[in-house]
Image: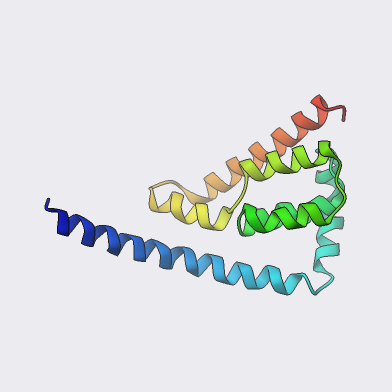
Length: 141
């Protein structure tokens, strides 16, 4: 295979992948931005509080975790710093985000690589919750 053909194929695949990712990232970004101005965030905090308490976190931890899951790690960082979390809580939130972030984007990539998207999502969410529970117990939960 000659170099020009490889470069052309790489550019074509890169543009196609970028388009697939943009179809996910852009709508999610606008939805999260909209939700910030509604009572839905408070509702999410209440709904997820039983799970967040299980992993040693206050309900407010839902916001950076959801942001990291829907978008990526970077917009979750200001959400973490804007709220008052202990070092234990930040450690748990960081670990959860490490294991379970950018779900829409990374699911598209995983599907393109031949994986089954919904299985990847479930495994990552369960791994994050389990890690949160273990950390909470290890750190004095």
